[in-house]
Length: 284
Image (cartoon, rainbow, N blue to C red; front, side, top):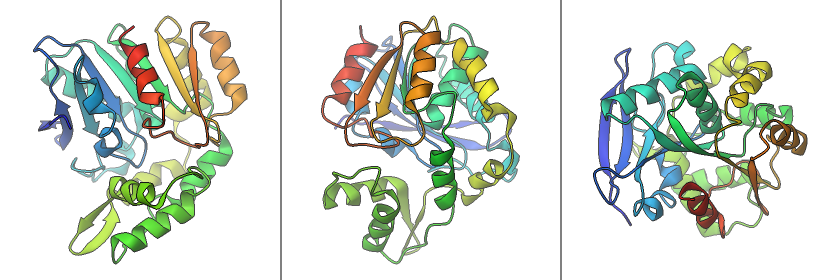
């Protein structure tokens, strides 16, 4: 497995934020920025990132309130545009002007905003199972478990809980896959297995947020229409409807769509053939 270095940087409001930095084949290699979903962290890309380092430097940040990044005392800053500003701060600190991006779920929405707010900064984008219209069924499912799990006495208990609330998303998974997934989602602290994110990230979702309303997201997506974009969609997803995909295609006539069988929201990007398809798209 390709080694990464731990990179810490300071946000404009003083938080210490973390990223994995996988070196590329040369100092001037293009940079690939991998953006995780709402409750996730850099481990989501631990299978995908090493296979891309022969062409890219790969940066995998953890958003504020997740993983090794500081939690925020002000929960109103757990917001899409704040995360995008943090990513711009990261890229500025590393003197990176242009990036390829893979964004899963919330990371996909961040990609829309990063591209719109900083024109020319995104070269190509892979959007994983998200669109400007977020299906209510999936949103309610996420709200139902957000911030409430655990603590668990051990990894077996954590794995059993995780599989019980997400079995419909990954119906073909083996016990080993569920065990690995638990270790991506949770962390062990003081002898207990706990959420690896600040439970308070749920609080902003309880109200209406202007930066995630459909009209705002569609306007951000419209700025993507000249950008080479690959949309990955789990066939069983409850967050990205086929109707939304068709509207995205109408607006972006060069949008490529990759469907992933037997997976809901969101594909892990290590499913058969998916990493290869992403690689081919990014280096085309």
